[in-house]
Length: 327
Ligand SMILES: [Fe+2]
Image 1 (cartoon, protein in one colour):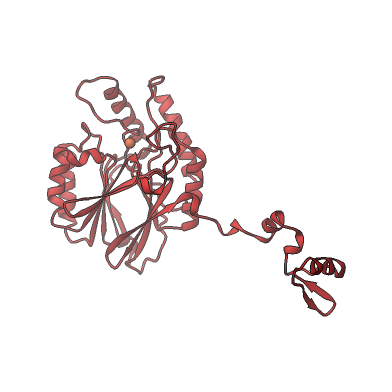
Image 2 (image 1 turned 180 degrees about the horizontal axis):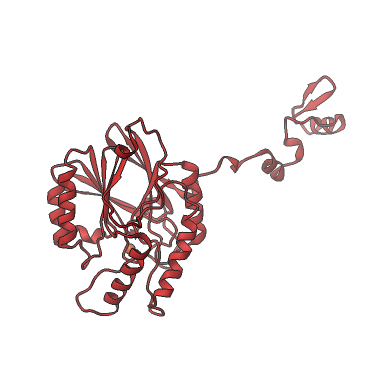
């Protein structure tokens, strides 16, 4: 498979909303894996974000998708561009460590939803749109990876919905790629699913295989709409929506996670990885064990005859080799 057949996109801006194009996996195989990075807005936890990025590198997916909300954005104390930019700098500095390509999708804290009233949020929408474009170019875009179409929407372009222009672009993109194996639609707001232009987009999607991914809730939920899987991806480095309360756990969808998507036999399969339960292989090593236990636990090292006698007297089984003693 040539590089251009493996990955091509429709982004015309010089800046790109992804970090690099060093895709993993085999160029010759149709199968691939990617990770979805969840929401981290509200009360970002830098240590969890750094841990998530280190574990992404460990798991080595072909690339990383996201569902937006990388920064918290405006707050009532400060609506200045400098305040927003500092938040971007913090996140982007962490993201530099992420080795696979990372595809950014706009969240409502990255660019607040457009409003009709021209109030503070309308100002923030315009200002944060400029900051996004200055750093990453396009706010919505598509790409094809190994015959799977990825549509990355901006669900705050008008009030909690995609605009007419974006809908037309999506319609043309879907027509142009009518023969792909599967279509993956990413857009931050699940609320947009009930909005008029999103509904029209869903009508167009009806005649193909597709899956939808959103964020925003901080709780993971699998939904069924129109007979398809619509996922709300949970958190990767923020607190739950219930401020001040610890996350309730897996069965409430409230846990720090990375979502692993395996594209096998032409269909996506999801596995949720609880971040706390992904370990590096140095989780247990002999030096760590000897820190926890007496040094004679090192079974590959001989112990003295006196120590062997003492331990045997205590009831431990000693392996006696010629002149050497082992537990
Ligand atoms: Fe959000």
